[in-house]
Image (cartoon, rainbow, N blue to C red; front, side, top):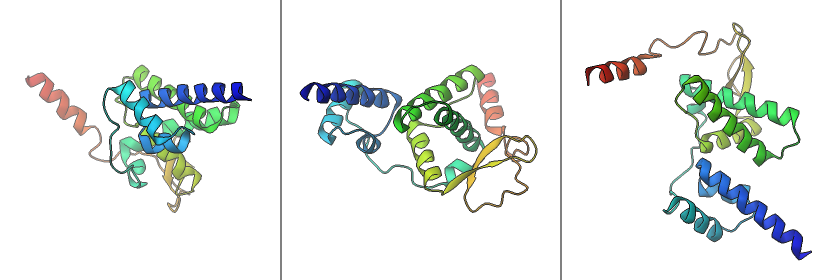
Amino acid sequence: MRGKSVVADARDVARATELIELGMRLQMLESETPLSRERLTKLYKELKGKSPPKGMLPFSTDWFVTWMPNVHASLFAAIHHHLIKTSALDDIDALIKAYRLYLEQCRALGLDVELSITRAWRLLRFLDARMLKIAPCTCCRGEFVVRDYDLTRNYVCGLCSPPSRAGRRRAADEELAAAA
């Protein structure tokens, strides 16, 4: 019996290590692993060389429905949904694999990473709680994160109809880089 608990403990430590390396906050680690707060804090200090950050976790759905974050949240949600549907992964392993695939896609497309592991974890909680949902775009048929109470019968995503200020930040950054 003792052997099983050592194996489970080693697996929990390995999982916590992976989550810390991805940037997961201590509060989330506590809810996703059976390890004690003290053990997680020691592990975090050992891996990062500093104490874990303090402060509140994001708690609003608003961030996920703004233009660029919505694109990234929707990409992550699609990857996660596909993994859940096609594999036998448990929830935390699906989160890890989906987040790694999201990072890989951002690198491959040359995109800045908008979605932290903290926000990805929170997104899944909001979807489970039905505070957010997935709705198809009537133009491109892609599926996007929307608020649960949003009317989605004629929904058009931010890629098909970007806001008027979309892309201005990148253009301004390029102008600054050219001037320097």
